[in-house]
Structure formats: C-alpha cells, structure tokens
Length: 176
Image (cartoon, rainbow, N blue to C red):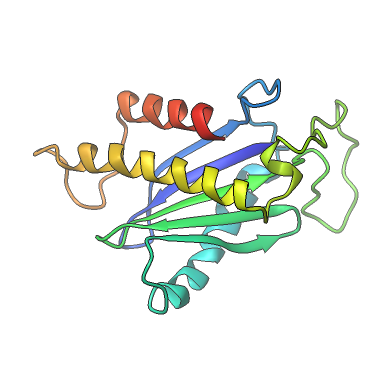
C-alpha cells in the first residue's frame, strides 16, 4: 500500500507533502506510485477539498474520516482548529491503478498488494483502518502544533523542517 500525505493551508496551498509506503506485514516503507500518479495524487487530494468544505460545517469532529474515493484511491481528512487540512490519500495497489483511458506500458514489476486481513488495504472501509488513520493524524497534529509554535513560523508558510518530516515518517511506520 502506498500513501500520499499533504498538509493544506488556509488558502488551499500545500504546506507539506510526503509519499511513503506501508511498513506493516513485510512492507518496505517506500511508496510505489506509478509515474503518472505523482501529479494525479495532488489533483485527487485538491479535488477532495470541495468535499471537505461541505462536510466541515456539518461535522463537529476534527477527524472527518474517509471523505472521498477515486478509482482505487481513498482520501481521509483531519481538520485543525485553524482550518489547516491534513489529507491522506491511500492506494492499496498503486501499480494496478490506471489514471488514463489509454493503456500505458505494463507494470515493470508484479503487484505488491497483499490480501491479508492484517493489512489496512484489505478493507479501506473497516473500523481498524479508520482507527489507524485517526491515530496517525492525531500524532501528526501534535507534531504540527509544536512546529507552528515556533516564533519564526508564519501562517501558510511551507514546512521544510527535516525533524518534522522524520516525525511524520515515524508516525506512518507506527500506525500505517
């Protein structure tokens, strides 16, 4: 399973982006998105922002759960009190997902998706998946609060801290 995590600012600008793979059930922790998915992931997440804007006024929770699905991609959202959005796109089998109507070259390696019940990809709608994503988002939120409390940080400024990136990666390994 591969993930694309981004933090979207109050002006719908990306503040932080990272791709990673699952570390559970023998995963290598590396994202295996196809080349065409690099830009499509950004497009899918930003298209889901319209749904977030509709849901945020009807839901009292910060974690909005799975808000959108497109082909084999599932988008989860966590909304902070300052209207900053944490968006997580998960794809159980990125090598099998095609984004165009035209066939492209065949995958260069076999699919890495495992049909295990312990893997989050086995059921993107399951309660275990929602709880793992929620725990991941809450831990990232704690690190985000510490990051923005820096007196030199300005609102909607891109986060380039390697410490923050390492902590997001550690949370991903822990929960996803």
